[in-house]
Amino acid sequence: MPSNCEKIKVMAISILNKIEYLVLLVAAFAAQSKISEAEAYRYLSRYGALALCENYRYRDNRPHPVEA
Image (tube, rainbow, N blue to C red):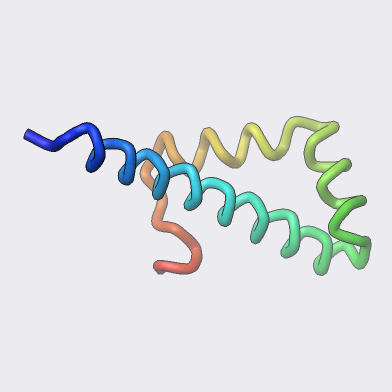
């Protein structure tokens, strides 16, 4: 049975993976759209794309883009 410390490490890694995934998503959208990353973040956030992509990726256990 995993200890509390091991559970916390797994949770921390999961959170870092989500952050990295969303950062890469925003950067890719910004590059594709030829806008700044700040503008891309605001656009994706405003229209709910960040929440949608995060839910889609983690619900279906998609491979992490860096790990693929």
